[in-house]
Amino acid sequence: MRRTPLFSGIIYIILGILFTLMAIQNTQREQTWGMFTYFLIIIATMDIGTGLRLVGFHFKLKNSQPKK
Image (cartoon, rainbow, N blue to C red; front, side, top):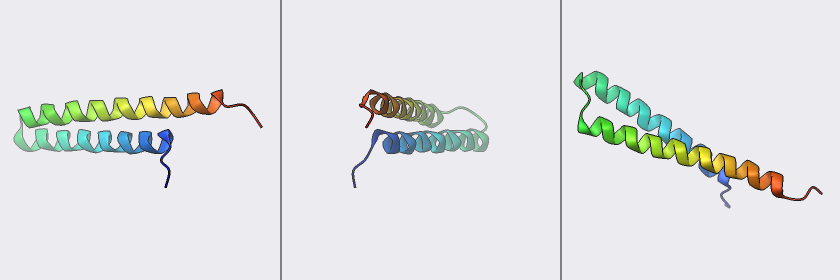
């Protein structure tokens, strides 16, 4: 199966959302922002950023191809 930037971007965005939800649950359970929570937020930020960049790349690539 060949991965497209759109598919990879969606996977990264989903992972970013999951890491964000894990960070929210961790904060609610511990009632404080610990080092693990900051780690989860950093990973979520990188995943969402990468996902948005890949989705944008997909549409840029699609628009640059000649029409048939």
